Length: 142
Image (cartoon, rainbow, N blue to C red; front, side):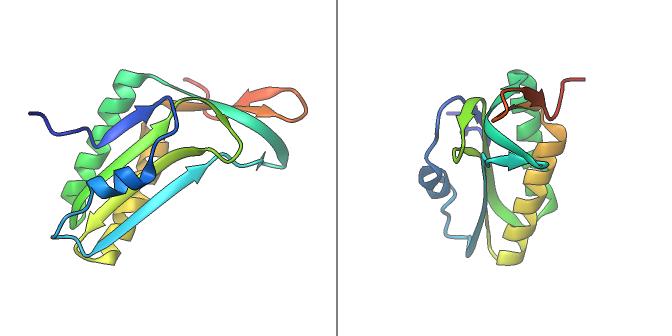
């Protein structure tokens, strides 16, 4: 049986507690997580909501590569990441990263590195809808 994916896209809300539970391991003495939520403003503009779009096959492949890189580069036991796609309302969870490690420093460092790499390398684009009625891409496709 294949191991479950460490990185995945989700087109509906997901349960962060269940994701954390998947990382429980007797070798781990620390857990660090990052949650990103849809906020009501960006660069001085009021935001009404947003939509994430992704090149799914490439996004999942690159996300898995990032998590594999983290396992090699940091002294961690395991890590996982879920990123939403589709329409999201204010306050909804957009991304979750969790890391289990023997010690807190590795857990914190790997968690920060993973979210930064996901935002930099994974082909996911954000389309914000503004209260004024217009909209704009924050990470337009190249």
